Amino acid sequence: MSTAATVLRRTVQTPRLLWNLLRWGRPSRVLLFGPLSLGDDLLCTAVLREARRRGTPFAMMTVRPELFAGNSDPTRLLPIDGYYVSGLRLLGSQVVSPYYVHADPTLSTRDILPPRHIIAEMCRLAGLSGQVALRPYLHLTASEIAGGRRTRRQIAIHSTGLGAAVPYTTKEWGPDRFAAVARLLAADFDLVQLGSARDPALPVALDLRGRTTLRESAAILAASAAFIGLEGFLVHLARAVECPSVVVFGGRARPETFGYSGNLNLYAPVDCSPCGLRTACPHDLKCMAEITPAEVAAAARQLAGRPRAPLAVATAELP
Image (cartoon, rainbow, N blue to C red; front, side, top):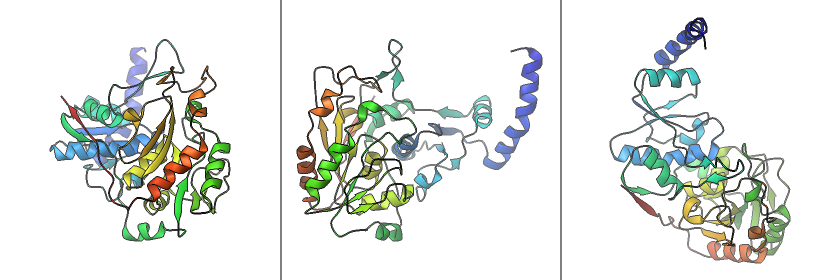
């Protein structure tokens, strides 16, 4: 970039940076994942909790402040603004983006997965050490929790992750299989479907696709005997509100990397797993085909039969 262009860019950016600094201040430590990171913003609550416990708290940059309502772990919530981020770095603030996976340079459709649980990896990237709890947090009010009870024998279910901002076809188990699970459970439970309005409909007692806010979905999960779904945001949300989940993992990643204790994680360790692939499975998702609707329904019955209590929390030790 030419000197004149650099001067012009800085001239344009400076008023915006100064406005953000006057309005939001200059925090010394900031956590930032990005505007598309719905599940990852929620995972950041684990980093925020561990950092505050150590007396080194972060501010949080997010476009979803509702995920952090009632949460005292971040020092403040900030908007995501590229000029502001650049200015904070120039002024000496530590801005941490704890990206726990990276693209494989030899194959564009593959992720290089971390050697530890993703929350532990995020904490490590944020400069934390010692024991960390492997769970996210979301704080609901009493009235929100009360509103989450929609049916008498409530199990929440989600049919696909293709409505996510960044969809991974290798996580898909198929709506027909989820529909079979719903039919297997229908005699004993009222299933409540969550997700995007574009998700395939399932034969459920209550269809709430596209009709709930993030916090309403969290409240429904908090009031449910179990959640059934794929590895992704709603599993993290369920864990944040103490709802046990049946998670169809297939073979993209191991439950030890993305899962939680207290859940029943269904994983098919075929010879090509964990592959880290996002799309273009060369084996027609044989790992998913090995997980049957009967297994998923049986796991949901097992979870629903347990007394509701806080879920077990796994920990990791960071050097």
